[in-house]
Length: 223
Ligand code: 5RP
Image 1 (tube, rainbow, N blue to C red):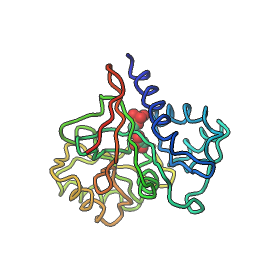
Image 2: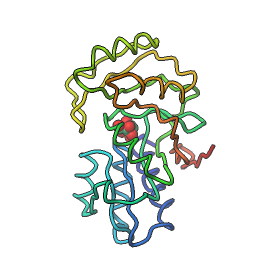
Image 3: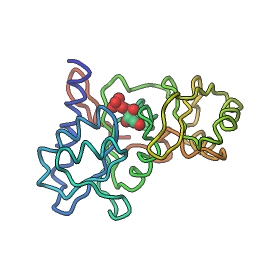
Image 4: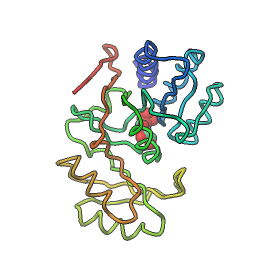
């Protein structure tokens, strides 16, 4: 099975997972990236079963609209039943690294508003220890050098993601070689640096369930 086929399988699995809980007024939180795109494409087939979606990026909002799914501002949606999104890495605690697509801040906000965060990925994202994937940090542009120096003090090697401006008008530092012992502590420590908007560790609010595509089928993982 190709990686694309695994992504399609988990996209469909996520629709199957939420479908029994959808009602006419339901609004679903939707993430960003190639796996989330597979979810959106599968979701479009059942768009008559729910009201609409809140998107974690402009790209996802456009894809939802292209499918005829109404897109709501998060401020007018009440609590979301589900947030569905991919990840760059996950460990067995369902703590994640996200932000490969530079959408980490809006992803974290929408995830925070959801009763259930359903992570979808193929099994290449499963790791024993987080940190092989460089940790994305969204930074206010004028604070870029200061934040980079602070990240070096924490033991990381930050690299400016050239040419990328987030949907919020900020920049991304990708932190290589970061020793992620306690993901919760590090998430909070990095977020305390002045100028950081947020970082791509999803440990304070991990996923609640993981649907992981493997060659033997989609596995459901809970902590
Ligand atoms: C975007 C993200 C994505 O969820 C993450 O990068 C995974 O993407 P893909 O499904 O394309 O592998 O965090 O900011």
